[in-house]
Image 1: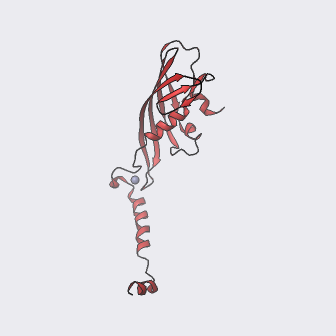
Image 2: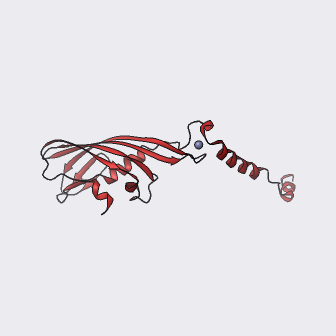
Image 3: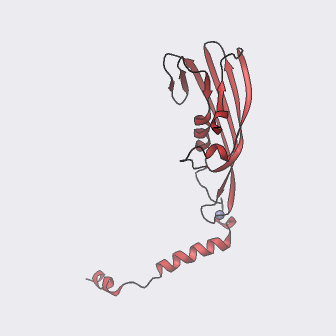
Length: 167
Ligand SMILES: [Zn+2]
């Protein structure tokens, strides 16, 4: 079964009122998106669906833990991914999904939450995927990467180019 099928919420036959539930998100979810920057994350998305016969409002609250190697020393870091969205849903002739308004055509019977959960997770990503302080990085790994770049800059220069610079 397609793992994303779990993220389709049927709304036909719902009683008017607030419906609260929770969906689980894990690495298997992100594996369905080949371009995902997130590979290893898990947690939950709280969903509140306010349903009336003519409108729906979807309130989503994402709460994941993301595991990723530090960009400087490769030690595994964990970041919380927290994000909230409120989406208005209306019924129309044709399905049209925009950022904060979904218009559902006549042939829609469920809400597909997979794309919005994917986008919310990426909006919640921290801008720096490294240890906050460089002193927290694994010194062995840092030393290794620093030595490499020093060697690079200490390369003896080519005497022919040096001669040209002096012209
Ligand atoms: Zn680090």
